[in-house]
Structure formats: C-alpha cells, structure tokens
Length: 244
Image 1 (cartoon, one colour):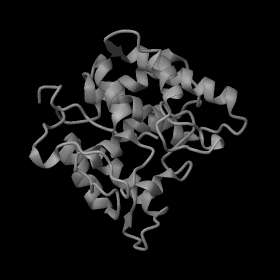
Image 2 (cartoon, one colour):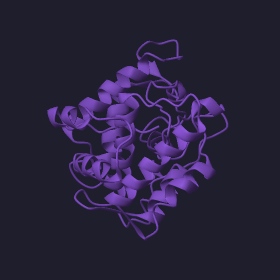
Image 3 (cartoon, helix red, strand yellow):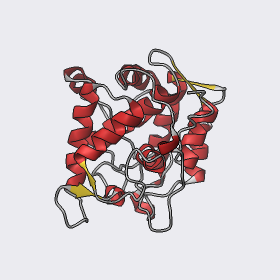
C-alpha cells in the first residue's frame, strides 16, 4: 500500500489518466507529487522516538510508512485505536506535512474508519488497512496482491523486482517511474484478478513520491537507494544514518 500526499486542485488534473502509463508520463506526475510532500525536510529522531520493532501483540498495516511511524512512536506503537487526529498529529510530528497534505491524510484516515474493527467508530487499527482497495492496492512495490493471499507482509521477491530498477546509489524520478510501471505490468501478467482502480493508481503514485521526497529532493528525486531499501525492509526511517 501507499499513501498519496495531496496538492490541492492541481492533483485532480494529474489523476485523470489511464491506469498503466509510460515511465515518461509517470515521471512527470511523480516529480510534481514529490515536490508537494512536505514543507521542509523530515524531522530528527529524539529519545522518545527511538526505533523499536513491533511486539508480538502489536498490529501493523500493509504500508511501510505507517509501520515505520508506529515503530518510531509517532503513531501508537501498538498500532491500535488510532483516531484521525492522532494520525495527522503523528504524521506531522514525524514528517512535517504541508497543510494540503494534512487535509489529504485526514480524508484517508476517514476512509480507514469505514473499515474499523476497534468497536469505536472514531478509531481504527493499523491492521484494518489490510482491506483490499480501501487504501491497499494491487501492484504494490513490496507486497503481494490479495489474489495470492497475503497482501500485508513484506515480500522480498516482489521488492527484488522493484529495486532491480534502482541500479545506482541514487534513485532518480525516471528510475522510480520505471519500477512503478514494471510492477504494474508484472502484477497484471501474473494475477488473473488484477485490478488497479483510480484510487489505487493515485495511491501508487503517492507511494513513489513519498520515498523520493523522504530520502531525496523535491525536484530531481535522487533518493539514496540504501536508505529506501532499509525503509521498505525494516519499517524504519534511518534518522541517525541521515545525520539529522
């Protein structure tokens, strides 16, 4: 799964597109979205937000970003009973969100409430986001499609395909776009029930824009490959290695 960071009315123009596009077209849209991610660089780690792995009874989602924020304590480490306000506050504390991105995440949080299993209509568990086509979608960069059963766990084979399009020390917007298009083509070829509706398509763009914005710069991408691989595989943001 991935989460799209909004950019006001301009975003609506970008998403009126066919689902599977050329890397060149994807490049233009990812470039715009990565610019719209945050007001400034992500914030540094303090003692309260030291990384801890999820415990045996903690819940996690298909989204590496939300899992990382929970492992760092910006979201409840248990992954349980998260309100939309807590989601926005935690994401802003960890990522320094733009105001329009806060609005988008609030809309996404409200979608999560529709799948809530907490017994409280105002909260959700991270594991509730496993519901297919709510926020999670086919052709993930690091998860299997729901057709194959487990659409939430990190899948090394799938991620190996993704990162095979990142041949250099830095991931350009072009290389990121190639990886995204390749995953869509592979998923469509192997999954007889493949489906990537508009929401899933925009979320997939957002996931790519997110890692470029977190670990690179807003105009050229150029995210550090080792940081991105670490982030996807460990559900952690390498704050210390980033010197922040």
